Image (cartoon, rainbow, N blue to C red):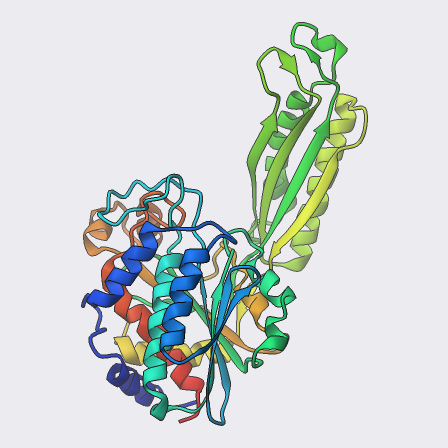
Length: 418
């Protein structure tokens, strides 16, 4: 580990023109192009090609098509540690409402989570480090990950042999754009993001004519009771000091108003921070669904399928402290603070083989005018009031383009041999 002041000085030297508040033209053009052309999970063909092209031009050995649309670039530069930098590439099925001149050209698809920024940062950081090979030794592996939003991208890359086909990491770094006044770089040691599971439920009823409900077992009513009763799982079965979110995000039943359907389908999402609490919540979901279906006289038990998603993201505390110190030295006192544990989820940690430390931090991105106009007196109130990730109004300030490159460059330089 190089000294934080040394890493900060070197980062500034090899990334000229990327000071906070500056707008690097070429970088902005690349970012705006990605924003105009968003692609959904496992369909990131154009985005992957753009990233791969820049990596090849910078001298990386590039492998396309990892886990269908993933990109891995390897730059071997003598003896030393192996550092992985990861950026996710996919967009969301959201209709953009920002009114930006470079708004999405794809109907119903938007980079509403900022992965276009992540790809831009990753590409530019890879280029800067390649151009400054004389300042470090080791191996740099750049990972363009597909399908983070769908929750299967990192697992698919692991299944496609990313840990065997490419140099094994000694350390893994990643970052995410987030709401908050632009110019800050939150770090949280230890647990930073929650685990996420999806649960699919099928309630089996007996269909029939809407005028003769007595001849049916109505799955719509039963499913409605399930939705209502599930609201008590967190409020009445989980201790108040345990952070859990249980959301019913999907309810599908029937095709027309005068037919009682034969089944109803629910889609649930569960966020937890503790493995024992997770098991308790999932067990409660099954118990509630089965009991409501039994009470309604359903002809057969419901189908309850747990679809494991993302594990907890737990930063290596020592590593996070060191990278946080580097970023504080780079951007100034007060720019790095503990964001706290969030109930958002990420599959980033799956890319780290067991025992390999990783660090995952944030880059705040809300334009100053938007932040100042937002109601609220403290940080939490303000963050809740400004457009955040997954909002059709999410529009990061372009001033974060340069700093987001430097966060990655400095993290890599802190571990690559000097």
